[in-house]
Image (cartoon, rainbow, N blue to C red):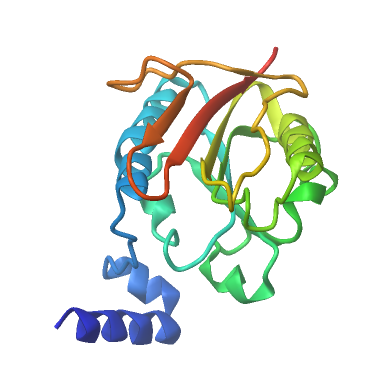
Length: 202
C-alpha cells in the first residue's frame, strides 16, 4: 500500500508539481535527524521570522524530492540551490539556482539572506577542510549581519574525516530550541547527524 501511494505521488508530481503541492504531496524521509530539522529547527526559524520586521530570506543548499515540501513548513521567502540540473524541478519557480554552493556569493551577492541551511553537504561534495572553509566563507558573504547558518552533517569517519571548525567571520551560538544547551546537537542514531548553529558576526 505504501509503495502504491509513493508511485501515485510521483506520478502526480510528474504531471504537475503545482498540483502535487496543492494536494499536500511530499516525499518525507522518516529519520530522527529529519524529524528534528522539520519540527525543532524549522520551528525555531519560524519564530525568528515572526519576530522580524520584514519577510525572512532563506537559502536552502541542496534540493531534491525529500525536501521539496520544506517551503510549506517555513515562514520564509524560500530560495534553493543545487548543483544538479535534474533537481531544478524541485525548486520554487524564480527562486532556484542551478549552481555550485562554493560559488554562490557571485550569484546572490553580499548580505542577501537571513538564514542559510546547509544540510548533508559535508562528505557529499564538500570533501575536506579546504572545501569546508570555502563553503563557510561563501555562507558568510551571502548572509546578512547577524544572519544564521544551520550546518548539518554526519559525524562519521567516512563522511567527515576532518575537523568541522567554524571560522571565517562566523561564531557558534546556542539557539532557543528546547533541550539544546550547546551550539551543536547530535541526533543519536547510526548516522550521528550533527546540527551546528552559527551566526554572522555583526
